Image 1 (cartoon, rainbow, N blue to C red):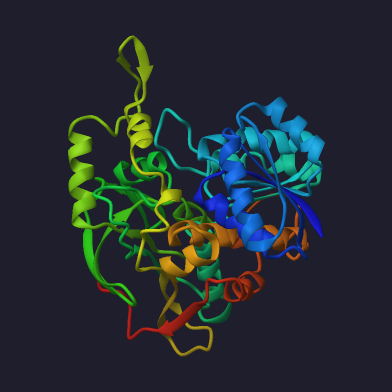
Image 2: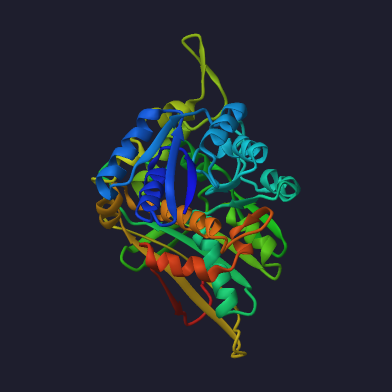
Length: 403
């Protein structure tokens, strides 16, 4: 039984805190903090109604390290779970170092002034966390997170080596909005509009954003256009699977989403450089994010399924030659909302955050330093996915993907 402090009060945090409360034998005392305390209070009220468990709430600016340290020292948690914005990863890690507390997040750090997703800023903390005798677990969401664990499970149980890897992220849900993002609008649009990068023959190859499109028929969704993008797990997977010849990340977008995004780009609303407006500096993308629907408000109207997984080709463990396997999860938006009051995209990230936290608190996953999901034993995580709402399926394919 452990005390945990969760930072952030969006949809992912809501799912994670609900799932923690449903597992009170692991998470005996849950504390939730964000810049807007009223959002924390709303989550706490929902948790109380659905589980009967109490959640203590606080107001905090996660970028103010001394304030974070004071809050951590006050609560004395065994683990800090960072579900805030990626810009805040490093300050929260600094606070955990100073307070001597374990750390977990779901997305890697990126600076505010550049859409650049890289692990090197956080990997640089390894020695300091090791010397402090504490653990930082990076990327315990779905992608990154579950997709990394899927890959390493295949490498442990099905494939001796992985030659090619494709990560397929499909959201087949319909939220009824003309244009909305299914997770933080600012982060979503920065990711989508950044140049695509994929791993090939020992280096990253960059291509224009949304320039490569392929149709794929997803189970429980149907045919969808998916676009090649860059995503941070390609960086860690290419590091921890040294034999990898090619790694790609794909995400589906509907034609309406692409049309609206193109118009917003053309008129400058996706920019991240400050502009002057009525005598004040504003960031266009931050203003756009402020007027778009909040992802945590979409749960009630969202229908359909997500389908996220990986397709890996390599040398079979049983010596039978080259094999291709597809391992994936299908998540119902309606079921996610019924259980936690949130749509499926938040659910598929919040549940893995809870699972990673549970494995750290139980010391099933342990170590001193900074670690990615690929460095952990995949089996206990995979077992907990099945037990906590994200069941997975693995199937052998006829051959490598042709796209």
